[in-house]
Length: 340
Image 1 (cartoon, rainbow, N blue to C red):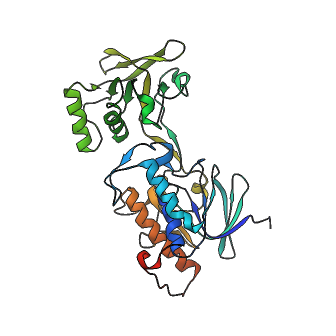
Image 2: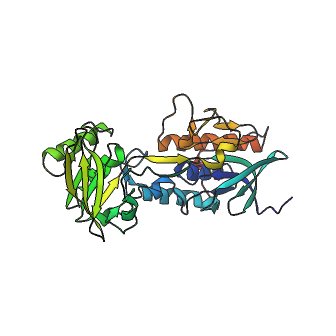
Image 3: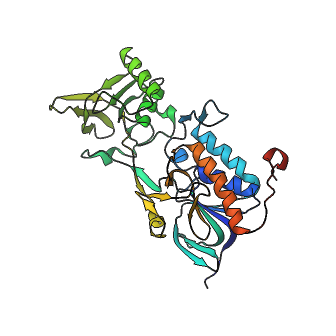
């Protein structure tokens, strides 16, 4: 057998919010954890796509920035000394004598008693709009050119911003950037937006007040620059009518392309890149495989961070029962048990 680099009770695949809270819950069950994630930083989508976006449905927080939530989850898990293996995927998974042997794309081999898959939407990237030459404007620097996510809100101070899309990301960032940008125009193919109703109403009010412009029903058609930076976006409606919008930056929010990678080859019950689980235990299959968060599906599933937190607690208890069959667990409340 090839050399084993690490031995642990549980390996968590995915370092998003559900994965990080799984580490804490496993720690409370006195189980050690290693964490593998394809990104080069923990936090999943919260870190990669919208670190400065406020989140309003985390219990106990009227509002918290995504990056701050990640920081809090990291601090919460820290007393249990998790080991992070970042910028790598699990490429192979093998059952060996009632345990699991997994190997990552960097050749790290981990012997683990249970696995909690918290891979979110898997490896992801933006859906790029079909504009000729759009890649020439990508990566031009903060606050200029084409960006598929907002890392720092302040980068758009005093900029002419064109946002394309009609979902929550498009509307949320329009509401946020209108406070600091020189101008904000939001392009959508129809007047109705697929965002939270309260935010859609706020957007309409700002448009009526002249604080931003709703460019509807239009779609992106062409993108132009002066050889150094983006200058103009051409949009068109279904009748062929065109408009030109001045722009320093284009923010297209057309969702993510998803790829769960090698997980698809592990013999799990998959439905459209989601893992079917038993919600009573979060079991994804025999032998100590569990799954939590956005990657799972079951009747009544709600894709919320707080749902992932609850699933993490369920999976951790089930993982302990798997590792210590027949051993009664005298679980105490965290207020009495404390943390290391």
